[in-house]
Length: 161
Image 1: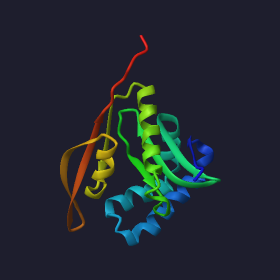
Image 2: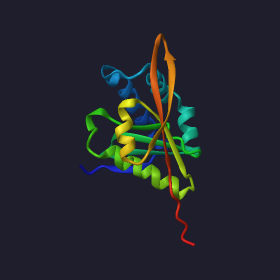
Image 3: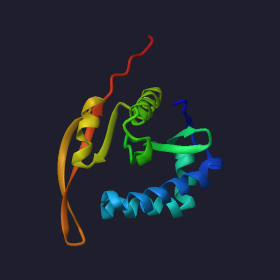
Image 4: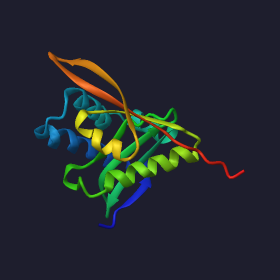
């Protein structure tokens, strides 16, 4: 599969909003948590959010032809609020390549600690790319409690000096 990973710009906004709309409407059958649904719906509707992230964060998309297959975002404090691949394209190495792109961007920008809130079923992936599963948090969504984990990775920065 010959996909491209590129830095997103404002010209990608419509496609990004459509991607997140598809995630919310199509993934409900895969039991997206209420918290995730709220997060992704915000990403569908909030143009100001995206305009801010295009200026003040690192947003990358994976595209095959002109279709977005995945999206990742890295904040300047090392938080990864989004690392998502469309369900039709999972288990093809796309998330791994997308993650490694974020790691390279982090190192280039002297960001040495990466962190992401994950679901328990995502721990295998994040351990595979070198994260430690650090914190368990109980959150109430409606009447349900669920476990949220925080994955942390300490990067090694090598200076050319």
